[in-house]
Length: 448
Ligand code: NDP
Image 1: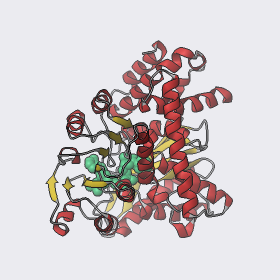
Image 2: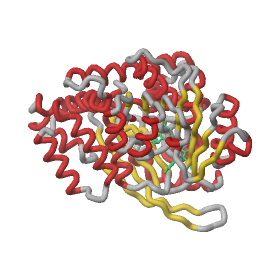
Image 3: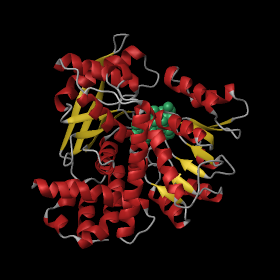
């Protein structure tokens, strides 16, 4: 590893000992950047890595709220504004009991490079709360969101920081957050993305992360003259990203045989076709139920409590983890490789552990890392911001075409940069290098 990079990594580890996810993300980036740092001393002279690994600002706040039974609650709220070199801060909000500073710092750090890869002018940020919307009534979710925005509004704005959704924050939550922001600042402006179509949203935004990941996988497969048609795919999660991943795989002639949630996984050897997917969407988005209900409706499928999807199918050609970080470990990677997996493309953020990534790459399994593969979501958020600024709405075809072009361009950047630094076919290195260079050069231009 480059000496400068090694020194900064050791410093990050020493100063953030309990932030394991954050250290994992920083280590991967610094390792990838070694040849870049070897070739260009300007990055060290300008202390670029030191400045990149410390958020420009972290806001931590109390979120007090009263439920419909009159009981008072208090949660923690966060916004990590990591880097604004190439545009206003941009990144999702996550509402999940596991949310802590380490997870939000890892997500915000990753977001810097991901946003840069899209080629759109967006800085990196992430935020959220340890609030758990599961099993909470709509009105209580509204009360929580209103309290959350009562503090967050003073730190965000269309030219400053534009949050979006993530785990636990879908169109319902974005609506309540937007309503409260509008009420406080008295302006109908593009402060959040993921809005509903009839009040400032963009077509294709709900589909963008899942569709984008499949478009990215399609590009990766082309490098080996392969296609999605006829392939068996394992998908994890059953939320926004997983749902539209299944939809696009079906459209391109593949067959998805697994889904999961935080309580277990299902395996359906017949495939989750569009009709079954409709059921999952209604189950998850409207009834907010559990994936185990799938097997009550479709008896050909089996439910495995507390299981992940990776070891359930005897044959898997494609894997698209779409739930959460570190959900696919070395043992899972070995099982997928043994089941015939030829390509993994990450819909979730950092779902594969370092051991799993090493297993895939050493077994010649094509591997699309999250910061490239799932960038379609934030890219389409960028398109939503453009439409809001211009006060126009593009058609579905227009947004989808732009999304496909962006994913193809990201793929091209990964391939080109990896090859330029002597690591052909290494998408992890290519994504980190391509994302880094634009941000680092902007930081140098703008002075210290
Ligand atoms: P949703 O909240 O819509 O769905 C999340 C899914 O993951 C649910 O099925 C959930 O199960 C499952 N899940 C959450 N935590 C765990 C866990 N600890 N173990 C197992 N399963 C879990 O979120 P999204 O689909 O939006 O996000 C999924 C992933 O994609 C996240 O990593 C997110 O950061 C990433 N991502 C999302 C983008 C977007 O546009 N939405 C953009 C880029 C990345 P349960 O229902 O039981 O909670």
